[in-house]
Length: 329
Image (cartoon, rainbow, N blue to C red):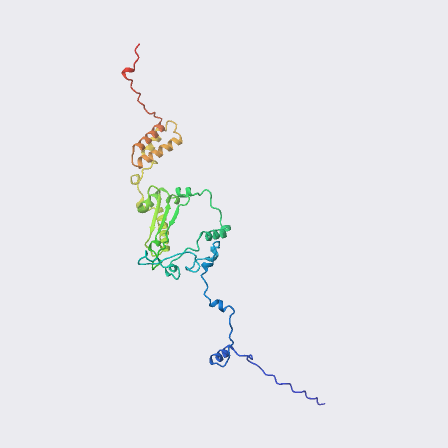
């Protein structure tokens, strides 16, 4: 039995591309004048066209400066409420230097407006929870007078000046001071270190000072100074065969192994040895007398130490009686 035929469906178009104009088509029509572009006006156009006054004129006296100048930035005359002037005048008495408005001299140099006391206080409060309190034992007096607390110190300087260049050759100089007592070297290493670095050694304070200024940058001078310290430390600990010397080659007279020590040992063999305190005092005075410049004071102190060690009383001359002082009966 034949089935009835179904009605033909309507033709549906297939859109491969969206039924709208692409941006490129709109741009071409706009450039050729075939499309109308609607004009859109901003509501704040009038305010934008007006010339606003500098911000510094509307600032209050109790403003929070870190919010206005939070980080390092180039100088802006419209923000800084300070009557700053900088520049060159041929006759400064007749006419003042240029003002801050559009002043290139103020824009060239670095400023420290981001390091004011409120800035530093805010930064310190922010990192305070990550820091530990400073030791009470390390006071300013101890740090300045005793270099055992901080044996190594590094000094350098930054310079800011008016000119065509921001660089200053003096800023590359690095000075390193080290207390050699903190290195815990033996007598041979200390003596060798003093001989190698004799030009940079302070004999009185026992401090080694190295000044580096040969390299063009500060970092290179600092690295070179660290290299010199490392080389001096390890070279002073080396003992070459030709460095072995006798007692006569020593720069200082040492009590240990001296003839005075041998004589005292022979003297105190039969009797009881002296107290330790007296012996240490005698050794100290002997070292000062033999290794320093002889003075009446050092000679007198050495004499007193010898008398105290050996138990020799000091002879005091009795005053002579005058002829008129006799009693006649």
